[in-house]
Picture 1 (tube, rainbow, N blue to C red):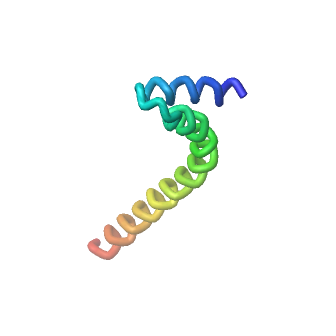
Picture 2: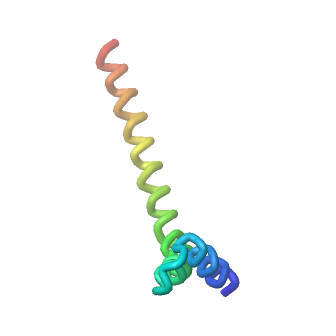
Length: 64
């Protein structure tokens, strides 16, 4: 709950004087989205890194 409040305050500061509450909503939603996206993104990046390592290793063996 404290994270949502702090996120809302930070979002409101970033949005400035729009008086529509968009920054507040974005600030409240951003931590929840980050929690769900981060593990999947890390998995994709790790998989890409591993695939590139295998690809480079295979190319080095073929060249030798």
